[in-house]
Amino acid sequence: MNENLIYFIIAFVAFIAYKKYTQYQVLKLVPSLLTQGGQIIDVRTVDEFVLAHKEGSINIPLGSLENRIIELDNTKPIILCCASGSRSGSAKNILIEKGFDNVHNAGTWKSLRKF
Image (tube, rainbow, N blue to C red; front, top):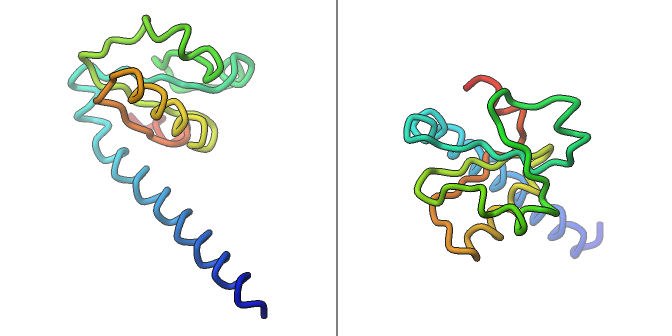
């Protein structure tokens, strides 16, 4: 087997494992974040959100996040979610760049249903 392919597979598996681990760590914090007034922001499209979403979450699609940032309370935790965790990861980076510091990527919106 090609040595480069083996390194790629190892790196890919490590990336997925790291992503899952960090999302697991955030999910452990969710009850506490909600107690602190945390806002659940779903960054999926409007159509995706209408089909199914976490009750109480706010839909702000990733593409309109920068225009709607004024709707977010920077004094409270922000819990981001989407379909896979990728868009919410991008949203987290945007919010941090805009000065938000208590921002958490919970990954999929489905993972928040139990809270």
